Length: 294
Image (cartoon, rainbow, N blue to C red; front, top):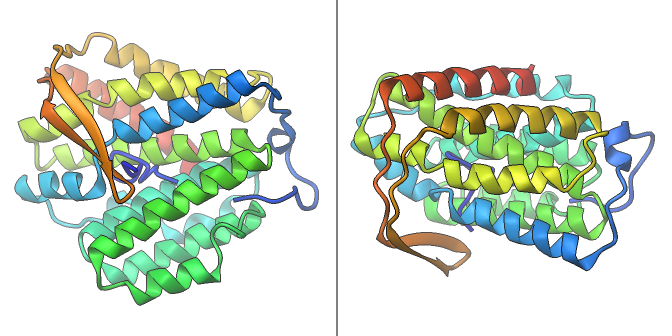
C-alpha cells in the first residue's frame, strides 16, 4: 500500500461492526448493493494509494530538501475530543493517520504514540475499534523505535479499517477517511515547500492530480444528498480546477507491490508546477484542511 500518510494515506492512509447508538445521518447512508459499484470503489481506492508516494519515499524527499520535523503543521492532538459528528471523526481519522506517519518517518516516537492514541480514540467513537484495537496499539508500541516496522503496521491497519468499513456497508465513512488522509498529506507537502522548495517535492505535489481524479470518482459514487459527502465533493472539485492546468507529460512508469507497499518504477513523467499554481493549491488545501480539523 502506498500509505496515504504524507502526501496521503498516510491517508492515508487509513473498522466498523454495526452502528452503535444514534449516529449522524451520514452514517446511515445506504450503499448500493451492486457488485459493479463495489468493484469500482475498490479499484478507485487502490489507485489512490498506488499514486501516493510511500512515507519512506516522501521522507527522503523532505530530508533531501533539508526539511526538519515540524509539529506545528500537524493537527493538534488536543483537537481529538472536539470531533462529535461522524463525518469529522472519519475525516480526522485519516488526518491523524497521515500525521502519525509523518511523525514516524522522522523517528519522533513520542509524538507517534500520541497520534496513535488519537486515531484509536476516533476509531472507538466510530465504533470501528475492532480493526484498530489494543493488539494493534500494542504492536505499534512494541515497534516504536523501528521506523520501517511502524510504517508497515500503520499501512496494514488502515487497510484493515477500510476493509472493515466496507464489509459493514459503511463505505461512505471509509471514503471520508481516505479523503482526510489525502488532504492532510497534500497539506503537509505544500507547507514544507514554503521553507524547503525543491523540484522533486513540487513534482510530487503536481502528481497528486492523478489520485485526485480517483478520489473524486470514488466520492461521486455516493449520494450527494449526504451533507458530508456533498461538502467533500465540492472541496475536491475546487482542487481539481486548480490542477487542470498543471502539465503532466506522459511517462513510462510501472507500479509494483512488495510487503504491502506500492513502489513506482520506470520513467516517471516530469511535472511542471508554476509558482502561481503552487501558491493557489497551497492556499486552497489549507482552507479545506482547516474546515476539516476545526
